[in-house]
Length: 435
Image 1 (cartoon, rainbow, N blue to C red):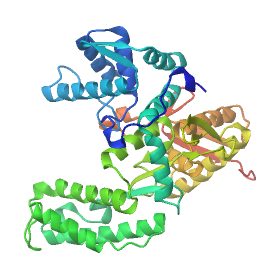
Image 2: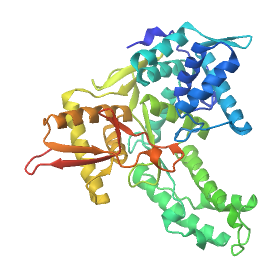
Image 3: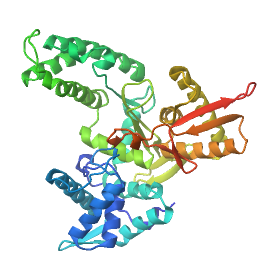
Image 4: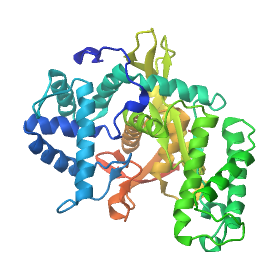
């Protein structure tokens, strides 16, 4: 472990919501690499723009699948400069860079971090070093992980944010003519939310009063007419449905889970934690509409089992342990979860090949492991399969890669196995064999 290569104060001094507003940790690498090449701020910015596009870094929590080609518009350029400034400011907080009369330079700590990526050819160690830097200022991950476990003791640390569009509740968009139709949708929506709260949180909640507040608010601001039979402006349909989604996400976060800070801070720390491997978050868990978030790490004074690795020490004697199972025993456990999830999905999809991302979601949740660790386990499983050392056969193929679709953002990272991206999988078990 390389805790001492970058010196940390280990004193939390900043509130969670004061973090800079960008999600993707690769921005630190892009900035450090640009400063390593140039000292003039405008030349650094030009390099930052190019590397930002090469690494497909957007302003959301998702990577871009398309590049901003040609001359950037003023809006695009302003967005690039805003992110550039945010990354500079946060890099200064961690002592990675210096700025003197507009001239930027790397500190020794910045060089160490940059070399960590270049020497180890990847972001895993780089991101864990960033964790230690961020935690020395914010203690954000400590708060987040403890918050997750406290928010749901029924299904340990699992947070749900259900999201049901009208079509998912069998309402046709063309049928929405008046305020009354949105009231019908809202009633069915709250019924589904109440069922999810009971199923995943073991709580009984009556959301009728909150639903009335939402409808009243939509009429107060003019998105819906006051009278139940009055027609609404159909151009406002997407805005109205987004208000429904945002209202209930905030309700779950604030009223059910009692989160102390803003939704934006929750999202930023959640998706940074996902990149590091200490929190998982997905909007694509099979057979669930919405987003789920859960920890793949713990805060404790002592190691609970050998499957947890200490990656950060706090001044109060607590430590941040990431779930990092390894060895032949855990490899066998992984294969069992993989096979079980595959056949569960196959019954639903009625297809020999099933979506590898969907399989990954189930296995990661059941084993409480990161996507990075899933990929490592699957890589080893596939190699065992190729050498005939498994009681099963695995076929990994490529259907349509995200780049071949019309999507703008990479909302799920593809799975790299044997040096290639794969997104569909089939598993065969010989008759008489048990896994």
